[in-house]
Length: 111
Length: 114
Image (cartoon, rainbow over the protein chains, first blue to last red):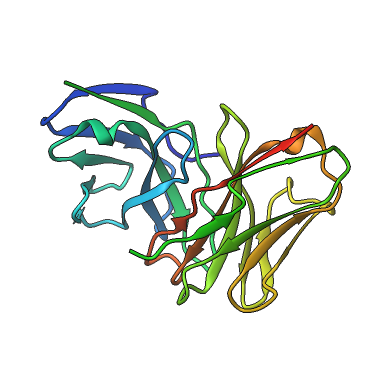
């Protein structure tokens, strides 16, 4: 089972920042937080991941709390193309470790 | 940007028939995966593959399933005798190394068993 809890849906106005929360209170010290998204029935798309430090890339920022029990994915300027299901996934280290997907957050970006 | 390529995009097969789903991972990636998603349900892990052998498999990946990397570039998933409940999107993914990078998923093969 997924070790994360996410709200089932969120709305965001285009051009605004989308802040997607995730709880992972049982995360272990060697587990990473990954974020993926899935647009329609396409293959999931990697967004970002982190261990304990905040991370930023060209797509998004990831803020992880100091106790690592929760995180927030930030899309700084959401566009209509960011409408998707966003998955927060806790992944263990190790060779070829799997991703366990939950139900994610359906983000709807509106005009 | 490098892509994971899956063929065919859609396959229809009769129950009991064998199917082979094909994937071409990104060339310098070392880890390979198959996932599936039944319509309206979660994405589910099937199997991971590294160094020419299975690293981990799920309960779904029973004796009817097998994987192969026959020629160093392709990565295939075979279902020996398909059932109606095998109808799903099947996603192949590859990864450059353990947990320091994210997976790249292909666009999927929609398998319909009739």
